[in-house]
Image (cartoon, rainbow, N blue to C red; front, side, top):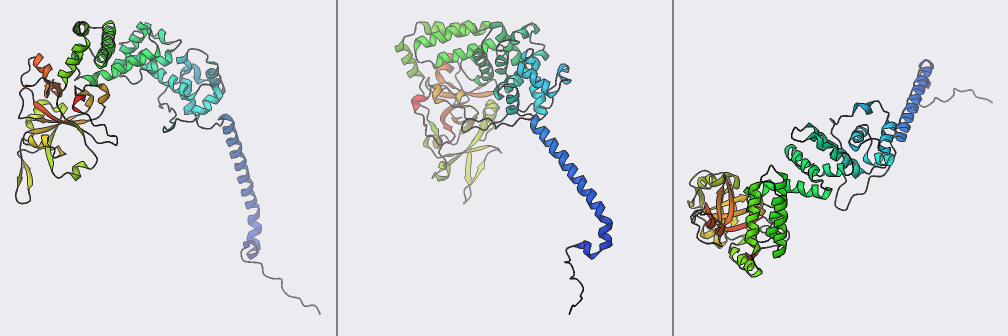
Amino acid sequence: MLSLSHPPKPPSFFPYHQNPRLTTENRSRLQQQQQQQQQQQRRLSVSVSASAAKLPFSPPPSSPPGEVYQPFRPPPSSPLPARFRSLSVVERLDVLRLRLGLWHEYAPLISALSRDGFTPSSIEDATGIPGAEQNRLVVAHQVRDSLVASAAFPPDLLAFFDYGGGPELLYELRFLSAAQRAASAARVAERRLDPRGARDLARAVKDFPRRRADDGWRAFSPDSPADCLAFAFFRQSREALDHADRLAALRRALDTADTDSARARIAEEIERRADGSKEEDEEEEAERRAAVPVLRLRYGEVAEAAAVVLLPAVRAAEGAAGVAAAPARLRAQGELGVVAAETAWGRWAVLPGWAPVMEASETAVAVEMEDGRALPWRSILAAAEEAVLVVADRGRRKVEQEGGAYVVDREGRLVVERGKRLMETGVAQAVATVVLVVRPPREEDDQLSEEDWE
């Protein structure tokens, strides 16, 4: 016997069975939406494929160990010459690949391609120009543009950088200011220097302002790249250990110097060195040694010290006026030993209670030197580009010892000079006498002996 019954009810997760009328009306609309989504996916796929074909893939260039690769990113203001604006991307790549024209004519294309999404590696794949050379071309082009805009640079010298190693020469001048760059580029073109010569010249010009405290600095002109390079040779003569090497460096400095004052100072040094023997040099070195302790702080040394000294700190740029304004005495008041200064002061240095500092604590001051190389080190190897604290006693201002070291004011700036040099120039009174030189802490132990002080 057959039994008729209603078919089972479909699950509730099929909504069109819940409302057949609604499903019929919306079925065509849902099909249209699906078709539109499929068309959009096809267009996106085609666009991605085209972009992938335009930008060839290559892995990022390997960088030396310990260095992070940072590809050049041109500034958004780099202009593209009008002759290249109508070219397609493929045509621009061909110009670079074939190196059509002068280097400074096609160099802007690299910046334009970078703005269009190309990476240094993809440009190298398409043109054969390595990433380092791309950077050099772009930077050299910017340096050349600054020379074109400079009224101090002779326009007729620009042609010297159009061929051969023009990008390499201009690339070496990238760190100089606009005025320094114009004068240095003129020197490079007139003397037809190679990239190494241009690099040495740029370094000498960049380093010259920081050598203000060195002997003979004022005789050389900062506006003359030749004088800056001559001063670098002059300094090398002081660092040379062999007598013949000293004279060779001085003669090279004399051939390079541009101003009369620089030539006169170098000639004076040559005359003084010409008759010198090895024994005389050793005697002079012995006279130039100063019994000034040079110490490097250790990490945690102040915290572990049984006693500490609180000294007012003065920047070298504040000159003698800053030393005079610093409080002279510090007194402990009350049962808790609260330290009180005679005058208000904003900068202080805390040092361990070393005996030389404790003896001069009532009149001592800590002079902040930004670069320890300005101090009269005996050997350039002992000097480092680091800040130092020069502890000086204001109670001892008289220049009494040739081998001593003294803080003096030079054109509103505090510098350290030897007593012998001050006596030769007739200076009888200094700002303060150097008691101790403190170097910042670091991992390596490179404590200097008293013989390392020049």
